[in-house]
Length: 333
Image (cartoon, rainbow, N blue to C red; front, top):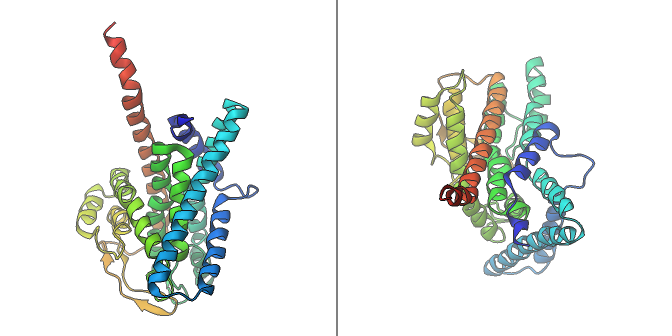
């Protein structure tokens, strides 16, 4: 049953095609909801114990371990059971589970919902739409601020929601992809570095940083390569990434944001308001151009191009590594 964690690139390609065409299927119960429900219920039980800061860290470690282990066992176990019924069914299930773990089309769809109200000059509606996809307060943002926030979230989530899941799918199939999704969900729910979650979410935040370390840098690389598209700046993308890739409290977030900011020639980052508190953040990129609505569409094209290029590259590497041995043996005959 080792093959359950080593899908063919064709599985990933088919899953990615489904994501590009359909996005998240609305009529299928999404596994992330189950993971989130478990984390939410577990947090309530932990809070009831009113433990010390050290105790919260230990409970946070246990929460992380159980959530990630249970997710892996559930996915692998389901694949194992289906494989015993019929090999073809496990292929379909692998494709389905990988598809559900990708978010390129949904990211484009949700961030693109701010475009129409911006074009109509309806800033309240644009702020409302933006608030669904960003963690910052949006009430005081003007048009340029809305555009910057939308571009930032697409750039950052190109790593978290697209490249990283693909990376782990190529490494270990649907089981490893969903381990990553569990880690990412834990971070998004309890991984905040504030008074409430600083201890409980300590392990979740650190492990999310660790699992995103390589994907974030790969995302930046492929965004830079995708900036060779007409109308984008390859030199600007590379230069800003080299200069500003560390301009963020997170060790990973600034990498894709810097690559996108340089490609588009706009400035991202800067101070933002979270839960009513102003948070000082360094700028990323140079303000060569003022943000325009078209920049949201441009970052969508960057995301899709980087995703396609990354997937084809991984497929080629898979072919060379796993099939190369067979070709080498044939060459001796």
